[in-house]
Length: 341
Image 1 (cartoon, rainbow, N blue to C red):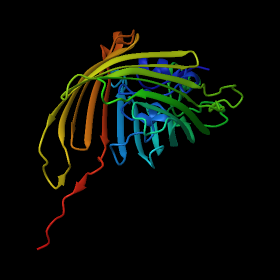
Image 2: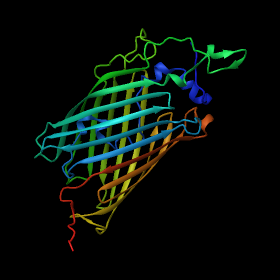
Image 3: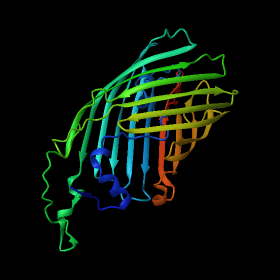
């Protein structure tokens, strides 16, 4: 059975292998921007913020598709006490309005090492939730809708499918370590997480197809360097394996802090303006340029992927555009009282 998209040749080749496409997860260039999505053990492990709320959006392959692929995520996490953290996130992946995957999980973490020992952070985490996947059968076109050498979408496809959607359980586990001694200028870290622990059956179109969602292993490692009171560097990497797919990302992000004054109706014990600049390299896929800004409790980042794979011949290097925003009110953050007249 040939599955043909009504869009471009590039997107058609991806959708032709729909059953293998749905078996792979989404990815972000700024993979560590919303930490619970990277590793359950990083949920609410901070102590300088009351909570953390973030949003992230990725739009890709617009140059080769009239309806591009996009990913959107919302997340929230916070510490309960000195050892426990809770949170959750939701993610929606839209594949050219033909295929969609929605993921919602709640997340929890626990600090294994006594928090009073500030030199080391060792945490573990667990997530539980659901995954909902569906296919828009109205946008699927087939060979037998050709008649007399012309295509007629009004003709019946004469295809019989068991279902067009599927709801599956989701369980994830992770562990994370970071050297956090403030007296040192370097802080190496290492995390490992495993997603889709139950590897649920995900066959959508053909019920008899023996298709299970492959477990995804993610290992992130690197080191943060405090070069001075103003300059920081983060040398980071991510390796992921899912089924037969592999992904390796290495990156460098620099930041510069400039102390500022409080403005508007908000005040803090200490405020600063921070700038970010860096780049990621995804092996045999893309080079990404990253820029960002943080003022007060809001951090913004934008990145652009320049394609280096064979797809470059089709999209001329125009890969993906990505935005993120994270809100992090610090402890001691307060809103100024307004006088009543």
